[in-house]
Image (tube, rainbow, N blue to C red; front, side, top):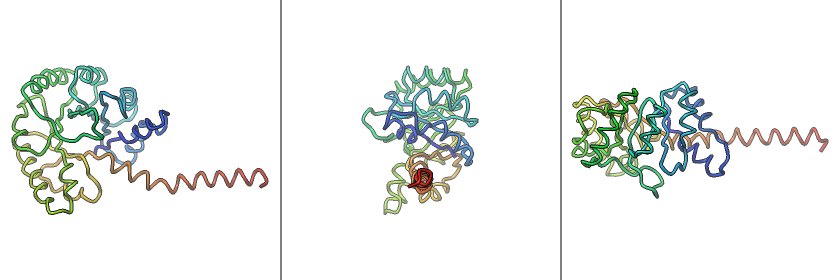
Length: 243
């Protein structure tokens, strides 16, 4: 299980303060059983940033999976901080979240080849975030990439609707094709405790990465305790003041 802590950083950035701290979230995820920490350092730094990545890489005691666009700036950052894995994703400046998988054009594949060579020298593994599209998956180069994370967003949106079987079938077919090529199969985007059991039926699935659902549920699960903590403090303060 990879726990994506981007939404913790988003909440921090909403006020421009230091709290909540993504590093603290990474430690809590580790204590709860997470197998890796995932964070997306975007070019616009709208949530996580290189400072978060550096601190988590140095102290979280878990493998770090850096999601990033394949740009010169981000490539240099990744090779400087050396996360355990890099997952390449597409980026659009106005998107709220990653909207789809990579499109492997000839120019992109050339850049990928150069980047994967540099990563190999630093011991950084390379993963691609891809739609479950057999034609596009067929363009993945034979070397330099060891894992593909299948974009489960369309399946998640169709869950419980007539389109669910079609979308799930695309995931099964794609996972089968990837496994035959010797690539590790991961899945992520839109996963929740409700649709996850179905996703776990994907053949050869080795990893799931979940962020928004976990953080959203954590807010609600912890809200009662947080309010109670403040109320208790208020009562104690008022009692101590003789009111």
